[in-house]
Length: 364
Image (cartoon, rainbow, N blue to C red; front, side, top):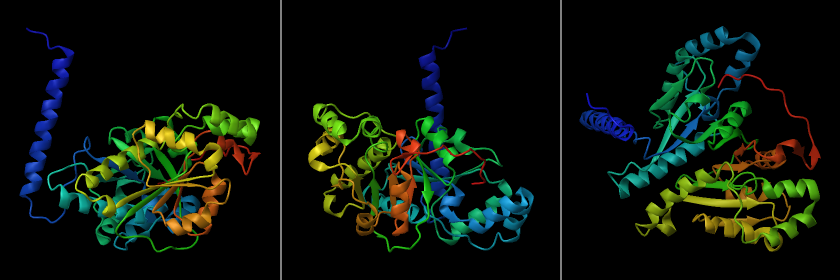
C-alpha cells in the first residue's frame, strides 16, 4: 500500500473541505430566501460577540447572580418571545452589516465580508430567545456557539475569529493571550446618534495597535526619558499590539472600496486617538503604521488631554483603549468603549499602581 505523504494528506483534506463548501453553497443558493449566505470563514473578517454585548441583559444577569443558573434559564424560557434590548456592540454589528451590503453590491461573488458569530457560554435552552431577538432586529447572524456554562474562548480559533467582544474581562484576557484581538465592552452612560452609513472605529495607540514597550518607559522612567527614547528610535517600528490585526483586516476591506474609486465614499473610517504628543513622539507611530503598510484615516494626538470630548465629535461605533480611566471618560460622554486588558497599563490607574482584580466566572 502506498503511503500518503503529509503534504498530500493536507491537500486531500483541503480539497474535501472545498467540496463541502461548494455543496453548502449550492444548497443555500437553491433556498428561496432574501438572507445573504454567510461567507466562508477563511475569506471573512470574523467578529465574535457575546450575548451580553449584543443585547442588554442586565436584568437577566441579576437573576443569574442572585438566584442561580436554573432560575436564569427558566426566566429566559418564560420570556423567549420578548426581544432583548440592544447592548453595547449592537450599533457596531449594524454598521458591519451596512459595510457588507455595500461590498455585496460592488463584489456580488466575493466572500471577503464581515461574518458575525454569537459566541456565548449560555445554555442552548436560552438560544431560542437569542434567535428571536436577532430575527426581531433583522440581524445577519447565522453562526452561534453556545457552550452551556463553559468558557467559549477555546472555540475562537476554530471560528477563525479576528475580533472577540465580551463583557467578561477574564475571557477577553484569555483570548488576547491566545493571540486573538479582543476587548471588554462598556455601555455608554448617555446615548449618541451614530452614523448608519459609515462604520467608525477609533483606536488608542500604545498597548492597543502597538505593544506597550514605550508605555513601560513612561511608567518607569517618566515623560522626558520617553521623549528621548522615541526620538532615538523614531525609525524603528514599534512591535505590534493586540488590535493591530483588526486594523489590518479593516484596511483590507477599505482597499476593496478604493479599487472601485470609492475612497471618498468608503463606509469604513478609522481613527487613531492617542495621548501622545505629535512633535515629541508622534513620528514613530506614523512611521510604524507606514512600515506595516497600513493607513489610518485620521490621527489625533492629544498630548495628554482627555479623550472623551474629542470622541464626542468622532462618534465611533467602538473605541478601543487599554487604560480604564480613558474608557470611563469616554463612556461618560456617550462613547461606546472597549477595554483592551493588555500591557503595563493594567497595573496603573491615573498613574498610580493598583491591585489586580480577583477572577470570577460570568454568564455571557
